[in-house]
Image (cartoon, rainbow, N blue to C red; front, side):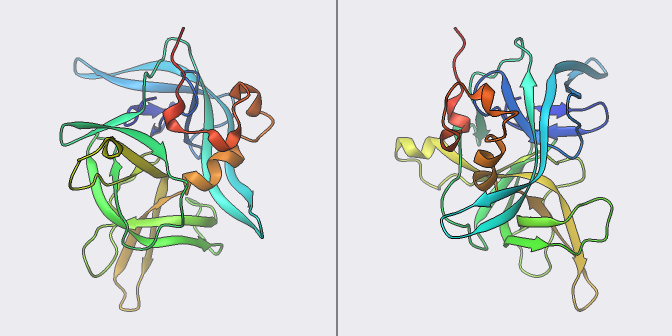
Length: 254
């Protein structure tokens, strides 16, 4: 379940990363049902071979996030996975231009428009772009392909003009990452933030009739604690406070 590893149900490819330890993972929920087996597909000879790596414990479409002064609904589209013992990921990391970066869930302030990001797609390629639409809500969707959206980010190419998504169908579950700084002069530069998980594509026509699209991502830092507060999940956390859940806390096997 390492970053960029292709993970799938019997019908869908997804991507995700391990959260707490070698037994617990996350991915997008819209392709899974509770108790459904999850498989990884590995290239072999002239085709792919499938290996069952675990099952879906629970799935979450939306979560209620309670702040100090307000409560809001956020789209999670997240499934929590119970991974089999022989499927082990020693660390969550990604290589960019030959250098390996550790990953950490972003829990800072709301990200503004034009924040540079990159997405690791289903082919293992890094797609660079920017946040075109900071967290927005659309409760008037009429398509069966996507439910109402609450506080999701819209990500597109950095070009001026109409918005263009940087992912394709099948990239759901890809991690939305920060971009490495231009200069790597200290140890902190060995770490990238995970802003969210890709949950789909969003398209519309502008006033001139031009087609626009963005890659849609949940806001991982806002939903991860709420998801792992579920009574069906919290028993797995080994007394780790949900506010401390992060990609960087993978426990090493005995």
